[in-house]
Amino acid sequence: MKTGGELIVEALKANGVRRVSCVPGESYLAVLDALHDTDIDVVVCRQEGGAAMMADAWGRLTGEPGICMVTRGPGAMNASAGLHIARQDSIPMILFIGQVQRDAREREAFQEIEYRRAFTEIAKWVGEIDDPTRIPEFVTRAFAVATSGRPGPVVLTLPEDMLTQKTEAVSAKPYQPVESHPGPSQMQALEQLIAKAERPIAILGGTRWSEQAVRQFQSFAERFDLPVGCSFRRQMLFDHLHPNYAGDVGIGINPALAKDIREADLVLLIGGRFSEMPSSGYTLLEVPYPQQTLVHVYPDPSELGRVYRPDLAIAATPANFAAALETLTPAHPHRQSERTARMHHSYLTWSTPPETGPGDVQMGPVMRHIEANTAKDTIFANGAGNYATWLHRFHRFQQFNTQAAPTSGSMGYGLPAAVAAKQLFPEREVICFAGDGCFMMHGQEFATAVRYNLAIITLVINNGIYGTIRMHQEREYPGRVSGTDLTNPDFAAFARAYGGHGELVEKTEEFAGAFERARQSGKPSIIEIRLDPEAITPTRTLSQIRHG
Ligand SMILES: Cc1ncc(C[n+]2csc(CCOP(=O)(O)OP(=O)(O)O)c2C)c(N)n1
Image (tube, rainbow, N blue to C red):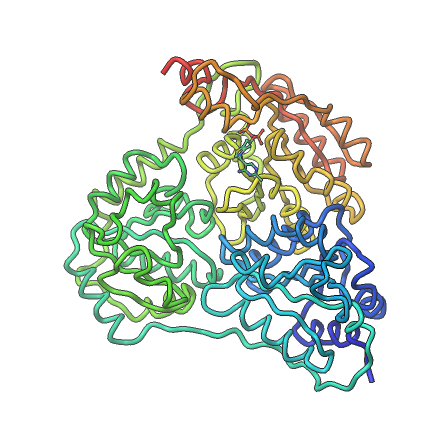
C-alpha cells in the first residue's frame, strides 16, 4: 500500500525524471514528503513563474518533459506564465498542481480553481487525478501527451486528500516517445521539387531536433546547395558561420533575406509553424496559398494546412526527416551557387556589430568581445526586449542546444532559463541577456542561482525604460511618453546582496574587465551595462524614431 504522493514520485522515477522545480504548498505536502527519500533533485524556486520557466528550459534543452510542482490558486496562476511559453514554443513539460480536497470541490474552497476550465487554452491536456490507483495511468499519459506530435505542456492536478490516501497500484513504466517518419513517396516528391527549383530556401524551426539531425540537415544543405535560415529564436539549429547560412528569420529580419524568401520558388519549412514573428506578420508567405511552392514538415498533421496550404505536407519529426534526407541525391554535383554565397555574405555583413552609437557604452564592441571570448557551446538565454536584438542579430550561434529564448516574447524568461541550463550543463558557460524591465520580472530567481551555486553570468542592459514599448510609443505617439519610464535598483549591489558577484559598466572599455572578473568570481554574477536609452536599436536612435 502506498500513498498517492508516493505513487506520483514512483511514476516520475519510472519515467526517468531527475529534477523537479517547485514552490512548495500545503496542498501537495505528501508529494514533497515522498521526494524526501529519492535522489530526484528538488529545485526550490522563489516564484512559480520562474519555476515553470525552469521546467520549460529543461524540456527545451533535453526534449524530455520538464517537471514543475506548484500549489493551487495563486501558485498555479503564477506558473501560468511558464505554461504559456511552453505552449507557444512546443516544449514538453508537466505541471503538477496541488488541488483542494475532493469533498470540497466546486464550492470555491480556499484557493480552488477548476483547471480544466482555466488552462484548456494553454495546456495540451489538463487532467485531475481523483483516484490514487489511477496515478500510473494519468502520469504515463501526461508524458505521452507532452512529448508526442507537437510537444507541449500538460497539467495534472492532485487533490490533497487523494495524495494521502493509501492504495495498491500497478507499477509505472517509462514512456516511449511517439515517432513520425516521412514516407518514401514523400521523399521522392521532395527530390523532384528540389530538382525543379531555381531559388529554393529552407527555414528551420520548432522542436524535436537533435544534434545529429542538425548535422544531417547541414550535410543535406551542402549537397543540394540550399540556403538555410533559422526561425525566430531557433538560431541554434544551423551554424551561422556555415557558407549556406542565410540568416535569422525573426523580428527585424535582414531586408535582403526577406526579399529572397519572398522571391524564392521553393520554401522548405521544417519543424516550425512559421507563425506571426518569423513570417514578418504573415507577409513572407501568403495565407492560405503561398506564391512559393511550399513543403511543410511538422511532427503533428493537424498543423499542416492549418495556416499555410503546403504543396507537399510531411508529418514527421524534424529529427526523422533529417535522417531520411540522407537517402536523397542531388541532380547535379555540389557547387555553391552565386545565390547561396551572396546570401551568406549578406548575413555576415548584417551580423557585423556597429562600432558606434549614442552614449558611453557601445553595445557593438561589447558583442564583439563576447563573440571573441566565449566557447561555441556557451548557452545564451534571454527574455523579451529590444536588448535581445544585440544577441539575436550579432551572436553567431554555431552549435545545437546553445539557445534558450521564448518565441512567445515573454519577459523574465532569461534568468530562470539560465539557472535551468546551468544545472543541466554545469561544465558549459551560461550567459543570460536581460533588460532592466525583463530582469525584474523574475530577478528573484537570482537567489535560486546562489542557493545552488550556479555560476551564470547575467548581463542587465539597463536603459531605464521599457524600451521596446517606448520605441513603439515614439513611433505611434511621438513625444507622448506614458507608462514606459522605470526607476531601477543598483543591480551590482542587488547581486552582492543576494550573495553573488556584481559589476557595473558605464563605459565600453570597462566591459572586458568586468566580464573577466565575473567569470573568475565563480559565483552567479550580474553585470549591469548602463546603456543610453537613445541606443534603442543598433541602427536608429529613439529621437530618430520620434521624429519619424
Ligand atoms: C510578460 C510580459 N509583459 C509585457 C510585455 C510587453 N513588452 C515587450 S518588450 C517590453 C519592454 C522590455 O523592457 P526591457 O527588458 O527593459 O528591455 P528594452 O526593450 O528596454 O531593451 C515590454 C513591456 C511582454 N512581452 N511580456
